Image (cartoon, rainbow, N blue to C red):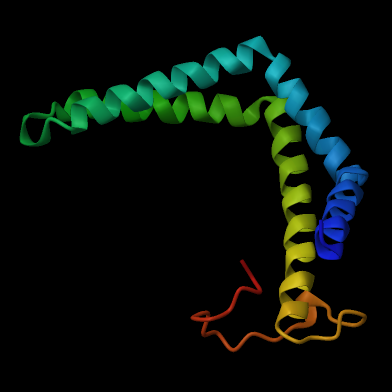
Length: 137
């Protein structure tokens, strides 16, 4: 194992020790334990598959059926997104994603020659041409 591998694993462990990670795991477990939410998510998937099956018929697709599938999907999706467990999960996932983007931004900046001690990804100015940039993603 190289020093970089060891340090990367330490960074992974440090990430798992953050409140953002702990909140994400707790919210994920709450979602998984919510039987009602999971039933709704399975139902959404069935509606999505039914819509795709109908749409695959091309010109022979029944537009009324597709509209009904779309209506059902949107109504159920709104219910899923209103579920407190799902709201906590989304907030926790967003917080962890923000942490990871910042971490990756610092690493990307360092790989591009920025000073590891002072580089701040948010302070990094963007020229708008993302062709060769990996900083924002």
